[in-house]
Each structure stands twice: as C-alpha cells, then as structure tokens.
Image 1 (spheres, rainbow, N blue to C red):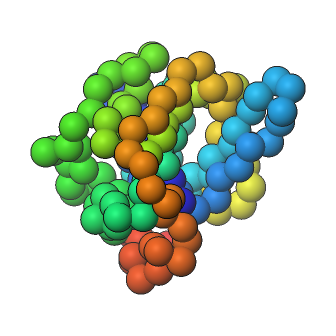
Image 2: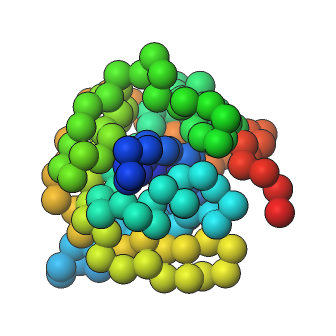
Image 3: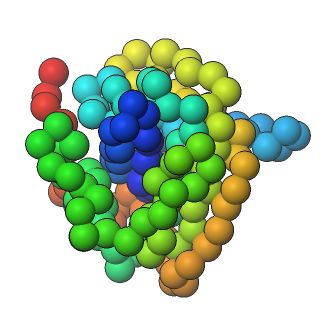
Amino acid sequence: MCVVTAVAGGERAGCLVGFASQCSIHPPRYTVWLSKANHTYRVALAAEHLAVHLLARDQRDLAELFGGETGDTVDKFAGLDWRAGPGGAVVLTDVAAWFVGTVLHRTDGGDHVGFVLDPVRWGSGRSGPLLRLSDAYGIDAGHPAD
C-alpha cells in the first residue's frame, strides 16, 4: 500500500493506492493506478509529477486519512508535515520511503488509470515493517461509489 499525492492548478490531493508496481528496470519506471472515482485522479490528470509514499505498518491512521476520506470535502494535508518536491509535488515527511516521478504516460485500464512515472528524487525516513494490504483491511474508500 502507498499514498500517492498530486498537485495541479493550485490544488493538492492524495489517496491510498493498492495497485502499484515497478514496471521497468532499465530505464527505471513505476506505475500507480488511480481510481477514476477519486479526487486525486482528477488532480493527477493535470499534474506533471506525482509523489509515491510507503507507510510504516504503525501508520494506519495515515492510511485511513488518505484512503477513508475524500479530498472533495477534506483537506487531508491539514496538520501533516510535508514539503514541496520536484515540480511542486507534495512530499510527506514522516513516511518510511518516498519518491517523486515525472508522469510519462497515462494508460486507461478500466475503472483505474495507470500513471507511468520516471523517478527523479527519492528519500527515506521511518524504519520498521511496511504497511501491507492486509494492514489496511476495513478502510472504506472515501470517494463516492459509482
């Protein structure tokens, strides 16, 4: 599980993502899949960069915020420590690891769109085991149901 953040048109957004993977070794590429029903997807369509964050297992509260709330009604970044990364991307500072990637392609996969990223900057912070899908069980999606 990871949190993806996007910034475009003066708006910032972020969501919990379960579909993400490295998709190329040479050159390095990573793809994150965003739900078309999600507020973050709408912001990411205009974004040039996305930030991908790995959470530590003890950060379920952060997973609940980004997965269980919608940016349509909640400022998910209020009260969080973050900084601007490449291209103005929002980088959460208290996470296990993060990277910012330039959006190279968008691929329609049905109810999700894959954003193929070229990593340009990365870092790490917290130690400990990473948050897994099983750790996020029971978080109800914050975006409206179709």
